[in-house]
Amino acid sequence: MLTDKRGHIRVFEALLATAVVFSALLAQSPIHVAVKNSGDSEVLYEIGLNVLIELDRDGELGRLVALGNWTTLSRRLSTLLPHGVSYNLTVYDENTRIVNNSPMSGGGMPSNKVVSVQYILAERMNCQFYEIRLQLAWMR
Amino acid sequence: MKKLRQNRSAQVLILAALVIALIASSTMVYVFHLSQFSGVEDSISPEDFVRIIELGSRNLMIGVLTNISRGGENQMLETSLEGWDSFVEKHYYFGECSFRFDLCTIPPYSSGLWIFWGANGFGVTSAAVDFYLNLTNEGTSINVVYSPNLTTSLEIYSTTKKLKGGEQSVNVTIFVYNEGEPALARNLTIFYKTPTGWEEANLLPSFRFEDYGNGTYRSSFIIQRRPHLNISVKCYDRRDIFVRANATSAEI
Figure 1 (cartoon, chains in turn green, blue):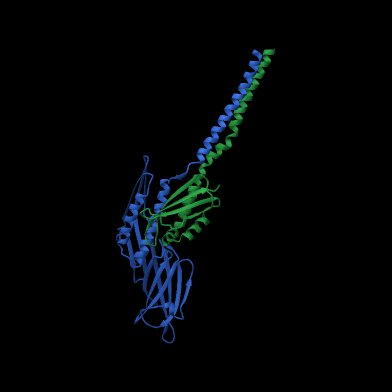
Figure 2 (cartoon, rainbow over the protein chains, first blue to last red):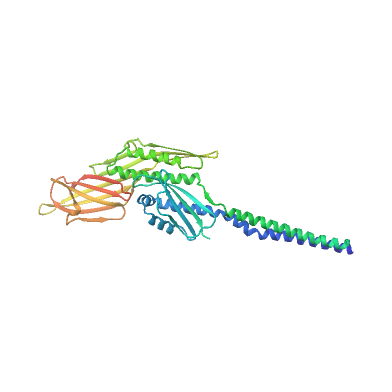
């Protein structure tokens, strides 16, 4: 009779141990979701690319680059990018020299993960070509 | 003593479970932190690259057409596209890129261009090019053919009506098109021919101009009567492409 009771306790303890392990695994599920949300960087990439395409659609991006109007370009980016996104834009000419003499950035302190969008630009005014690097990150 | 050891072994089971849970949790947290710290992510899908290049090709053609329509060399289309061709090939970092183009030679096009500023009330400034883009990356290959045709055209219709005192009223109706669709003009100037040369109609006190907002414009003015009045319209569209058309005014 006494041996039987001890057996019950063992089963109960084993169940308790299993519960401890499973509750730990359940507690990790938000982390799983967070890891899955690393797809946020894909969203960031799409946002950056679409902003550049939208600016380039009527040739405005090329015009601002050709005129070296970095202040207006920076302002346009700040308007088009959503809140909570920091950015840094660099323009290279055909010989991979940096064209923008003043930094174009905004949005504040970025998080660790930075997405870089490559954009190939042909501008209408002088028919010159540029490579644009738009780095984006969610703000902390 | 034996009984006590048996009791402890049960506690060890729970303790082991706790340790397992702790290890699993800390591993997960570590993996999460590693995934967060990955520096700069740099990639572009072939589809996005194609999108960018298509838009760039179009913008370049507009730039070239603007330049040629204002007096630039026709050769500029080919030389600019050759430069674009090699620039694009050099700037695809994720595999092999082959990019080439053919200038349209199907009449009325010649070397990718059709520029006709006629005396029959019709004017056109147009460029047509076929582009072939091939991207190869890790065994996959994408072939894209696109053929942008950029056309700014102008139609003008003019009538004159005799007035008392040796004068005539002139009505000019203008239609502007981009790629065959009604489009807005950035600037329109109407001229009429006199024995001394072309005169700007908008300098006349009687000049009236109406913009219908849909690519249709109408103008009227009064001048000294003369037979077979020639009218000329110069137009810059919203892309700054220039086109001109001349017409002889019909008397009504």
